[in-house]
Each structure stands twice: as structure tokens, then as C-alpha cells.
Length: 258
Ligand SMILES: C[S@@+](CC[C@H](N)C(=O)[O-])C[C@H]1O[C@@H](n2cnc3c(N)ncnc32)[C@H](O)[C@@H]1O
Image (cartoon, rainbow, N blue to C red; front, side):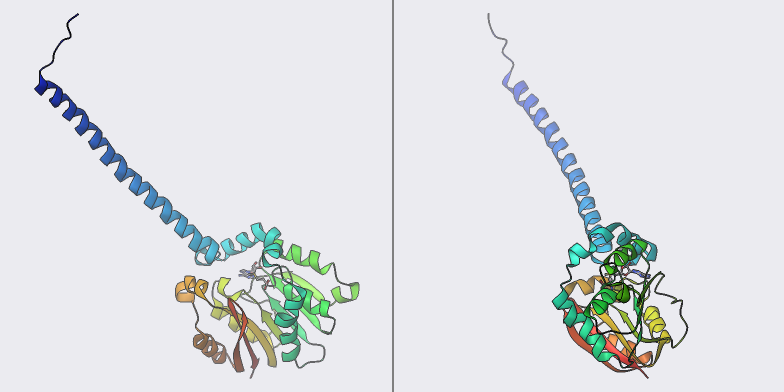
């Protein structure tokens, strides 16, 4: 059977048409892909910045506390606080800074009870510890951990589900106020510091932390340099303010109320 012969020009014309159709589709699909990938990358970046790095602080107090509520179960595993390290980082600075024999200590944003636990575990602190946190779940783990201490040690500690600002305590009612790894997650760090100084007695010891290293810059306009933090604390009526190297990503800020 004889094959039908199409004229050469017709075949070339058909091929061109097919080529130009598929080429057109590929360009359209590429542009769409570009936008979708761009949007996904933007969302991942925003999520990483707003939720992972800055823990919701730009989206409000409720979100910060909710994030701690839902991740409380793994907080101690992630932090993995070692007894020997906490002795140096937490217990010794508090004991060295405290002048009262049986001090009344307030720990703001206590989390899973780091300050009360390691201080009472050490055995030299004879005062009272009032520990507050905005996350009920974090406090639940704090209470569980304190349960490992003796009944006598436990009797020195009380936990309260409270926000850092305003503090529900009278002026000049504590000898020591601590707040570790928390200021950068509070809605207004200056307002929170002002509250801590307000409840501190004259001569009382303040011990807080300043976020540093590259992650600190993710807090943008909330970032505080060493000088800025020193000035802020001094302006609030604190004397002998010192910023000390503490952990890899935090400085310790200590001072005494004038
Ligand atoms: C990084 S953890 C630090 C916990 C503890 N101080 C430590 O060093 O392990 C921050 C804590 O701040 C608490 N927090 C965040 N916003 C708060 C607020 N507005 N008032 C009180 N606590 C708050 C969180 O629930 C969380 O327990």
C-alpha cells in the first residue's frame, strides 16, 4: 500500500506548531513554580523567625505562653541543665550577691523551676523562694521537679501562675529578684525590669540575663547591646551594675538597688 506523502512544508509547519505550544506551556509553568517556591520559602523563613528564633514575641504574650505550654514536656530535655554547671551559673552568683541571712527571693519566668530547684538542691540557701511563670504547663513541670527535693526544702518554695508585668507584689518586698533567659520573650523588657526593681528592697540584688550572639539580632529593634542594657538597668535606680560572660548566648546582668 502506498504511503501518503505529505508535502515537506506541511510537516515542518506542524512540528513548529507543536514546539511552540509546548514551549509556551513550559514558560507558564516555570513562572508559577517560581512564585510557589518563593511563597513557600518566605513562609518557612517567617515561621523560623517568628516562632523558632524569637518564640512568638512579635505576635503577643499569649502566643509566647502558648508555645511554652505546648513545648513544656521537652523543655528540660532540650536544655539538659547539669547540676555542676548550674552550681556555677545559678547558685554561686545568687549566694555571692545576696546579703540577707534568710533572703526572700522572687524568680520571674521560672519556667520548669531552674532557680528554685538548683538553689534548694544545693542546701545553703535558707530563705524563701517565690517563683512565677505565665505558662501553667511549665509550672506543672517545675512542681514535679521540686517534688524530688526533701519536704523541708520544698516548704521554702511557692509557685504562682502570674504574668511578669505587672508583678502582683508590693514595693520593696524582696531581697533578691532573678529572671534567667526570659527578658527577650516578655512583651516589654523595660517594663518588666522596672517591675522587678520596684519589688526589690533598697540594697537588694538583681540578677537577669541579656541575650547575645547572632540569634540576639533576630529580635531586631528589641536587641540590647551591653551598653544599652547597662544604661537601662542603671536608669531604673540600680547601682554597681555589671555585665558578665555567662552562657554562650547570654550575659549575666547583676546589680544592687540604690
Ligand atoms: C526560656 S524560658 C526560661 C525559664 C527559666 N527561667 C530558665 O532559665 O530555664 C522563658 C519562660 O518565660 C515564661 N514567660 C514568657 N512570657 C511570660 C510572661 N509574659 N509572664 C511570665 N512568664 C512568661 C515562659 O513561660 C517560659 O517559662
